[in-house]
Image (cartoon, rainbow, N blue to C red; front, top):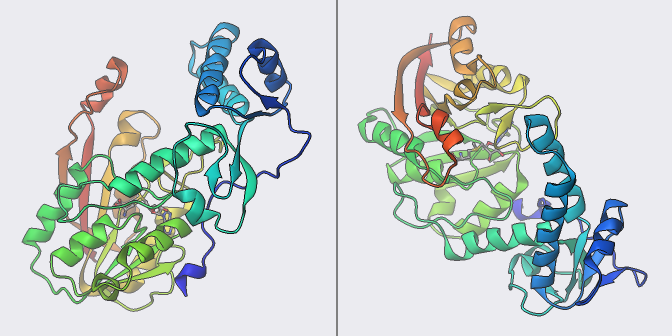
Length: 355
Ligand SMILES: C[S@@+](CC[C@H](N)C(=O)[O-])C[C@H]1O[C@@H](n2cnc3c(N)ncnc32)[C@H](O)[C@@H]1O
């Protein structure tokens, strides 16, 4: 049963009677000194005490560390990460043990049997925003119903690539018996395919939360018979040939320092060659291989390499039917510096066929 998969969640920290606590009136400068030395502090009274302490940590680092060059900013961020994660909250019977704390349903869902432990303040903040998305749902322009992204699952916040795919599906005239969605995430592309009449979509992901979340979302509805899930790398257990293979892969190469290894955002060297080799075996002779990508890595000068262009030039497996491009509407709340490259950003829909 898929629900037996272990989901990713913050590791509970064991409670200790010796844990230092922060209550109102505690000397903040002293606390920060302790944090710098690696001593954790437990917030005891109000949730807002934790927020104020985080602000103080911010102020302290702004004064203490240079913050100009890219390297300095990176160092500053990782020091903030270290110190802020030493600020702790107590979880008692699936609730946060301070006054005026948000109520976060993930605590019940993810820790049903653990009645007393600690989590860090940033972890709780992350869970809180994730809970809001999940509970309220997000409207996605190409879908009839709202999506409810599960904790720790990738979901789109901009929709241009989904529109591009939707327009392609509208014009697609091939058979619609089966499709494979590699890296299903919160499921949006699979849902689009079902909406456009695909009878069965096989969907995979290496992120257990994506699989567990979608299984919960579909429940025993008709949808659960149309989308079949598998927790696995690339094609997982699916060996059969299909008429449509779809992949919206990570769009950026993995950074060298490995500080951020989010599989939804960063790809490693082998991902694309492994994907194309496996796709070749599973694409029916007249089938379509569709990839969603972006020029993000190129316009931000992260790399000059485009993994799909490389495959077309060297792979000897697929040929280009067509590449559709759409410029991305610039997000309004970005800084001026970001906007410079954002105005160049385009999403791409690559349609490949067998050679
Ligand atoms: C950019 S997200 C796209 C998610 C979703 N398809 C969408 O379009 O919103 C990439 C997804 O691929 C998954 N992924 C990354 N590497 C994978 C692999 N080797 N096999 C299966 N899934 C993978 C990630 O966990 C993530 O959910």
